[in-house]
Length: 90
Length: 454
Image 1: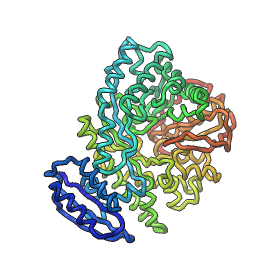
Image 2: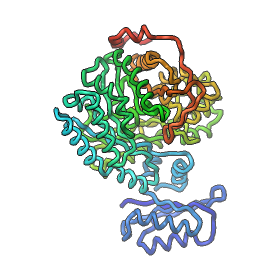
Image 3: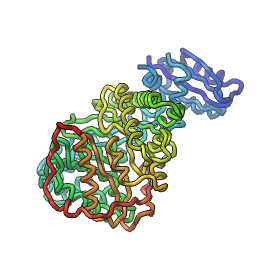
Image 4: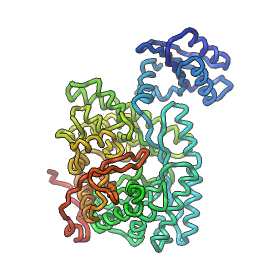
């Protein structure tokens, strides 16, 4: 299972997590871990998800999440987990 | 499992500190394209490059999307063309046809540079080596994406001074032929000592004859990330400074290793090496000179610069070698002038001279790089500059190189604009005393002794 990291950065507002989670649920993407923090007034959320049961491929998911981000005024990035594992784990 | 702060750190490096993978370079052996018939050789070269590299750019873009890390350049290096054309090329023009073929292939597969229009003449030039070298000005004028390099010396063999003399003339001729574009041809011509076979960075990349049929080499970058990291340890001692650089270099290199492995897997081509070099770009905050300033110098070039660069280079290597299973290429810090805004500022402030740059090349990778000099500089003077740099490489068992641009029609204080990653630069002063008699002696400088190191 190749895990995917979704990060959401932007100004805090009601419904960011709801919006993202709804999309994930509708696309059979399972959330494995979720955490959030506020850094310098910015809302930072990270989700680790499993996309292996999703009917859509990685590029489509990344693109659609990016659009959702545009709609609600936050930046949503979708990246394979490996880049973080490689950089921070020996 | 990975935590949110690590994720934020990585993305900050990418978004705010210019962390990127500078290049995925696909090395392709053209040894099987050699033959006596020129048109057949050209056809084979074109077919092989376009076949092996057809998915290179798409693969780079795919990795970029999946990991969210910019992969700035996708490039190709090939076997030194003096070897491939040796039996088919009888004239300079014959060699130029191969340069044009390389350019066409580069356009077809969508890479921005193709390196390997090269000759390896560490001891002496063969007839074909010399023909290729003499064809370089015309080849660089007639093509857009072809890069050329000549290895004229090594620690094991000494320096071929005949080639050094010839290359002084060739650099000037290349400048002349591309003078309407600030002599940009010279930005694509590198003269090496101890050239590595697996360097992924242009303009000096070629696919060495010791390499396999095809190989993926990756060059990472991240001067901005190192600078930001050491901003947090201002005023601390050297141990803390070095630890910080080392840790950052480790992280940067791991990304390179990941990208190299992915590219290798998708393309079905073996992974070669990761090149650890800190490669600046003209973008603000992506500068090696700014790292030197952050270490504690007013400008690059101030007393202490060589020591600061030495420690930077060494820590980058120490952090990098642990991060990758195979490290190669040039692996150090690049100090090109035109491609580094901090270097340009230092030259303008009068802090950095050609002589200080030469000293700096003793302790970092490569050498006198992307330096604009007056267009009326004599060929023998250029040869003298090359000879000095080659001697540093030969004696110190390291790679050194010269990529200088005599800008035709311009003098000290004038500006040249190369555009894009090649940047812009003020024309620098060159020592005007003559070395004619030295360069005109001819022959070669013997290999150095490997003992009594003092």
